[in-house]
Every structure is written in C-alpha cells, then in structure tokens.
Amino acid sequence: MNMIEILLVDDESYVTESLALTIPWLEIGVEAVYQAASALEAIEIMERQQIDILVTDIRMPEQTGLQLIEQAQERWPNIRAILLTGYSDFEYAKKALKLKAVDYLLKPVNDEQFITCITGQVERLRDEWKRVEETHQLMYSRKGEHSLLQRQFMHDILLGRTYSQQAFSIKLEQYEIKLEYGQSAILLTAQLAGRFIDMDRDSTQLIEYAVGNIAEEIFPSPYRIWHSSTPHECVVIVITLPENADRKLYDKGYVQRLCREFQQQVSKYLDGGLSIVMSDWFSFPTIISQLYREALTALYRIQLHEPELVLLDAVANNLQPMNSALEELHKPPTFIHLLESAQWQSAKQKLDGLFQKDIIENQTRESIYEAFIAISNGIIYVAHKKGLDIRKIDPHGLNLLFDRGLISSAMNLKIWSYDLIDTLQLHFSESDSYQKKHIIKQVQELVNRELGIDTSVKTIADRVYLHPVYLSKLYKSETGESLGDFIIRMRMEKAVYMLKSTNKKIYEITTELGYQNPQYFSKIFKKYYGCTPNEFRDQ
Image (cartoon, rainbow, N blue to C red):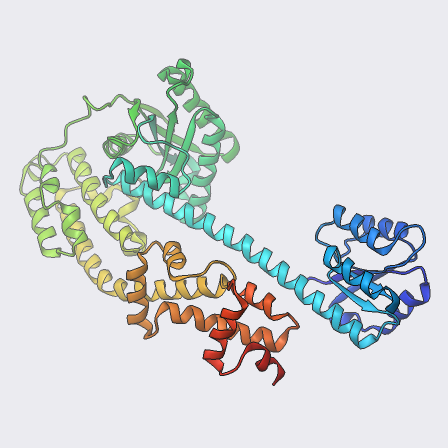
C-alpha cells in the first residue's frame, strides 16, 4: 500500500510541532511528516521529498500560504493543499479555497477535525492512485487484446479468409496495424532453425516476438512492418512501402540483402538460425494466403539445421497452380464452410473426394504435404474462430515442419484428418457452453473494473466485440438478469460501500460511478434502497 508524505508549514513552530507529535499519523496512512517555518523552507523540502499533502498557515511573513500553494501547484500539480486560518480570515479563506486549496481548518486546530480532514484527503489520494493504476492496467489489457486480435486476423488471412476492402481497412484501423490496403508488399515466411528447434512452446514464442522486433529494426521507415506467428509454427512478416518511396527500396536485390542482414542479427543476438522464404512484390493483401501456402511448401524442402534464404518468384500471374485434387476442397460448399457450420459428415465426404483422386495415386510427399496444408488451414481457421486452442487438440500434427512422419503416406494423412474432425466435433459442443460462460465472466469483470467510465451495454459490447442486442440476450439467458440491470446493481452496491466507508461528498460519488446528474443518481438510489444517499448515510 502506498503511504502518504505530508508537510506542515507555519511560522509559529509550536503549531506544527504539536500536530507532528499528537496525531496518530501511521494509523491514518501517513508515513512521513515534515515541518517548515516559512514558505521558502517549505519549497526546499518539497524539492527534496515527494510531498503529497501540504498543510499551511494562511498568514506568514514574506510569503503567504496562498502564494505558497500557488507556487507549489505550478511545480507539483498533484499536490493537495489545506489551509490553516484564524476566524478573522474566514471569508478570505473561503475565497482562497475556491481558487487553490482543497480544504481549510480553523485555528486553533482541533485534533479530531484535523484527523477527519487528513483522512479524507488520504482516501482521495489512494482512490486517484487506484484509478491511475486501473487505467494503466486497462491500457495494458487493451494492448494485449490488440496483440491477440492482430494475430488472429493474420491467421485468418493466411488461412484464406477474404474481406471486402472496406472491412479489411476497418480491421487494420481497429487493431492498430500500420499498413494500408493495396500497398505494395513483400511476405517473409520465416522458420526457426538451429538451437531454436528443441525449445519448448513458451520459449519459442519469446523468440518469435524477438525475431519480429529485429525485423522492425532491419526494415526501418518508410518500410512498415506487421509480424506475427502463424498456425504452422512459423513467423510471417509483411513489409509494405508507400507509393512515393525511393525506388531503391523496391529493388529485390536490396530487400534480399536486408533479409540476409536480418538472419545475421538473429544469429548474433539470439544465437539461433532463421530460414526465410521471400516473396515477390504483391498488392497487399491479395494472394497472401497463396503466397503463404507456397512458402510453407518451400520451407518443407529446407534442412532444419541449416538456415537458408529462398526467393519465391510468385506473383498473381505465375503462382504454382493448385493441385487438381485440392480443388475439391474449394468447390462450394467449401471444406471450411462445412466445418464452420458443423456439418461434420459432409466435411468427411469432401475429404473422401480428395483422397479418391490422384493424391492417392501419385503418393508424392510434396502432393501429400500440399494436401496437409489445405486441410490443416481449414481446421485451424475454424478452431480459432471458435476460440479453441488447436495445440491442445492435436499437439503433434501442427508441428509438422519438425515432425514429418504424419505425411509419410496419404493414408496417414487421411486417418489424422478424420480423427481431428471427430475431435473438433466433440470440442465444439463443449466449447459453446464454455464460450458463453467466458463471455459472461469477461463482461462482469469489465463492468466491475470500469464503473466510473462511460459504462453502458453498448460500450461493454464493443469491448467484447459483440452486437449489443446479442450480448443483452446472451447475458439475460445465462444469468436471468439483464445486462443493464446488472450495471445499475453494481453501481448501487459500490455507492452503498462508498457511503458507509468514505467521507466523499454525494457529488463525488455520483461522478465516480459514472453518473452526470446527482439528482438522477439519488432517484436511482432511492428506487433501490427506499431512501436518498444522504438519508442512507445519516442512518
């Protein structure tokens, strides 16, 4: 718990000495008490110590307490000031209070009144610190949410989900991704090599994050970078350039040299290897999923322990044609659509059509690997959309770049695919209930944490990325209470606590709970408890 430091200022030193000796400072949350006999001495102390509360006499030689407060607040705007004043200065003190100070006390100082006054300011300071801490936590939480959303968005487009230009641009803005639709882009698909291969998942994630940070340093402005892990245990880095950029920056040879420097920096600072497949320039985000598929195929041919740089000369007109058997997965209704709509048997029948064609006849490792990519893309996309951790469902299959036994034959791949569809079916039924409970828990945590902010059904719905009407119906069906009623109930419960345990004024409680009008707050409170806030406090 943060402790408070206080400064007592009075040219009559017996006043400050008496307060310093008689007040139970630690009990009311004050850790250190300093004394000064003049405004000049007070400023010197404030320059050395972190003073939170300044208590000063209003009449002092050379410089008045009001002048001291004004000077202190210019330099330390968060300091809370209290005036000590004689009865003859009462009107002057009231005017000063409106301008600078947060409270005033009449001299001679009554210990009980003094303790009440200081205790109130200590509570307000702690409330302020708590709100600042909650704001920082909220910003950190939102940053974390953006990171997750960015990664999910990247996974979606790599796995083949398409968006309209408007919808795509909106997501770029919402997720704070500094790229633009239609910009010239290069896709780097990187596979960890060397000592990174044997790391556990948590360590690998840290390395992937560090690799992305190094990429941002290697490709400085005007290059713009968006990096993310991928569903297939790789790192992808999208590099874009604005139209007016220096033509040298578009030169593939120049970008290739930067990629080699990128590999060297990873080796130097992370002590590990990195194989990179570099695409040709393309219009972002068109064909990105095809480029990613081509890059995975290229990475499959690379030796894991020997980092390489592979140029993927693929643009819209000369991408490798899709295996004719794989076209079966993309014929309406597509394999992804069948999984997404929980048509499990139809999804298996779709795979039957795939495995009955030339993939079984050819039995080439490359054709089987391409089939694995196409099937796993669909399964991963749908699992992520449902909020399932695919690694918990199948911790080995997704590590195919490191464990290649799965595609030793088409039959192995077929068995794996069917088993995974069965597992998904089981998890989907369980996850629907879990997902609803998770949403309710998330909503309740948001409401409790943000009562003092503009909290409404709409703002909460925006935070959990659901439509307000749908969220209201979901909350009502799961809890039996409307979300709007829950928000009001939490505000009223907090109001009761604050009325009982703090000295805050009604208007302060009103503001802290997110209400603009004290009369409206009193009306709602009376509806709940049968009396006004003032009547409740007086009971």
